Structure formats: structure tokens, C-alpha cells
Length: 395
Image 1 (cartoon, rainbow, N blue to C red):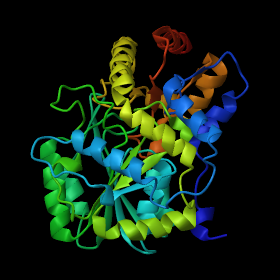
Image 2: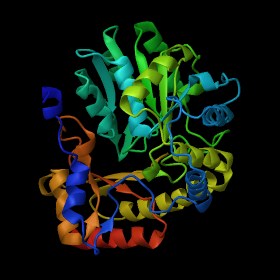
Image 3: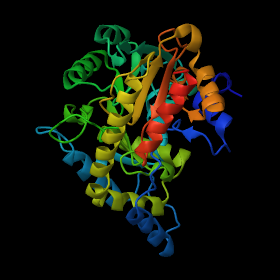
Image 4: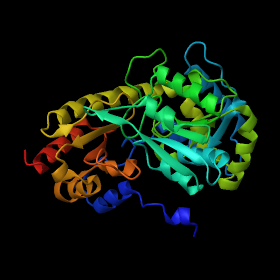
């Protein structure tokens, strides 16, 4: 085996989930997905495609009609003055994870320097490491539970030796979101250094602040088509389609054919019946995403104040995403978040993701943090979970 593969760590989130698998008494908030089933009209579209016998290969880059629909959808979300997005910039992928890996495969050679803003979903650190890259992390800083970007530190880390910057905003796990000014500063700096930007914007629609387009700020609002920018999206979060494995890339048109070659050597194509489901989801996005975001805001505004009321807990409301990233401040008692998460499963019947999972070489800064996915159909489950946490803390 390649050493880069041997060096990969087992998912800490999976370690915690494995400790609670098969236990019906555990409240499970460890994975990043809603417990709502995909809407029936999306499922019906996939069934209809199968019944029509659409079980064959498709174009590497995706069905032309789906690429066109994604381009229209992405353009409609842009702020005034932004450049329209054409289908020639779109590649349909087998999930957001696949989209990210394709982008890294396309852009990163062994030995290249990659800068990643952390805390972050662990795949974004592992993928360049798999390619043999040298990964440098720049950490957000927690201030009273709210994570903030040290722009000076990030710009100092991105030099003319930096091949790729990876940034996820709205962020998993913290809910941190880049401001427009921060995006403009980062884009201008990367233009000077010649560095690529890989922007994971899968939570763009799950945003709770008032904006013109109902979305978090996107690099696509300010970039030119030829900029060294690749943006990743997914049907998973905004359309309740986590298990379908369907996503897309937006990229400079010059590299789209090359990414098509990589799709061939990875998956050949996304299944046609799943693409048909995605097409219907885009056609009826108004029937899914606004209601989902409104419900997630209720979930956030239910969970966070209750956590804030727990003595010894530090947390701030996330601006986007579906997570509360909170800290148990007693470091001597709760220093190792992985062990704490495992104990919570066994002793309290509460399943959360450990903060260690989202850091490289976790420092004391990451210890004591836990991620709670609040995407729950039943808000009472969130309240029940806080009750279990309080009892476990002896309150």
C-alpha cells in the first residue's frame, strides 16, 4: 500500500457511530444529514426513469439537460452583476465527495503545497494527502464560541508556492461563513500568487442571514470564468438527497474536458436515473429548499439557546449549515473530545461528533469541542438530547 494511504486515520465520527450502532436508545446527531426522507416527487422521478429502462451509461460530464439546468440554477442564485454560468463550466458528479476528489486529482501533484482552512470536514484534509500533497492548515479562532478567520495568517500561508487553497464556507462543523470582503481579499491574493481556490459551497443555500438571493456569499458572485476557481456543490443537503450521491463542479471552461476524462477513470458517469431525480429537484427547488431552511432555523434557534443555558458550555449560533459546534470548557474533565463523544454514547445515549475529527494534529484549541447536527424533523428530539447532556454533566 502507498504510505499516504496507510497514513490515513479512521474516521473519528465513524468510531463514535460504531459505538452506538444497533442501540435504539441512542439519540443520533453524529452524521451530517437530515433525518427527513427525500421528497416523494424526487423519488418518483428516479422510479419512472428505471421503469423506462434508463439503466445505461451517460455522458461523462452528465446529461446535457441536467448540466443546463444546473447552469440556470447556479446563475439564478448569483448576486446582481455576477457573470452568468454556462453549461460548459459544469460537470455532474457522483456526490459532493466525488466532486471534491476529482478537483484535487485535477489540480494537485505529489509534493504540491495545499492550504486548508480548519476546523473542517476531514475529507478535505485527507484528499490532498492521498495525492501526496503537503497540507498546511490555517485555523479559525474561537471567540466566545464564534469562530473567526485570521486573515493575516491565511494570506501569509498562501504564497507563490501554494498550489491550492481549500475553503469550506458555510463551514462544517463551525457554521462560520466568509464575508464578501473576505472573499474579495482571498481571490485577489490568489490571483497574485497564481494559486487555485477549491471552494466547498455545499451549504450555500442553508444560510440563516438576510441576503438578496437567500444564499451565503459565493466566490462565483465575484470571480471571472477564467479565474483559478473550482466550486463544489451537492444535491445532498439542500434537496434532502444525501444517499443519492449526486453533485456538481463549476470550473473554468478550459478544464471541463479534462475533468470529464477523470470522471471516466473514477466512475464513468453518474447513474441516469439519479440524474433524472436531480433534474426534477432543480425544477421544483421552491418545494424543498425554502421549507428546509426555515425548519433548520427553528432547529438552530431551539438547540443553541438551550445549550447556552447549560453551565460550562460555550456555543454561538451558526450563520449557516446544520451544526452547533460547542465546547465543554472544563479541559481537565473533557479534554479529549473523541473519548468524550464515546462516553456520551455509552453513558448518556447521546450521539455527537468529536471536535478532534475536524482538525489536523489537534491542539488544545480543538479539545472539548463537539458537533451536534440539528437537522431533525422533531424538535423535541433536540430538547431531549440537551436534557441527556445536562444529566450526564450532573446538572
